[in-house]
Image (cartoon, rainbow, N blue to C red; front, side):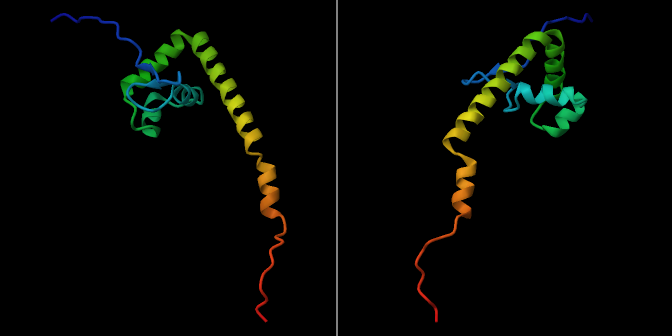
Length: 114
C-alpha cells in the first residue's frame, strides 16, 4: 500500500461580509488565532468551540504559521473596522446621554394617594 500525499486547502471561507470563518462553522479566524496566541492547544480550542473540527483547527493554525504576516494584516484590518463600527454606534447611541436620561428626575404629575 502506498500513501498518497495530497495538499488540502485550508478550511477557511469568507462570508458575504468578508469575515473569514473556519470550516462550515460560524467561528471566525480571529477567534481561533486569538485563543492560539493565548496558549490554547487545538484540543482546547475544540473544547471551547465544539462546532469546530480538530483537523480544521490544526489546519488553521498551520495556515496562520505559514502566512503569519498576511493573517496579521487581515486581523489588524478587522480590529480597525471594529473600532470604526464601535465609534459610529457610540455616536448614534450615546451611552452617557441615555444614562443621564434614565437617571434624571421624573417630572410627571402623579395623583396623590392621600
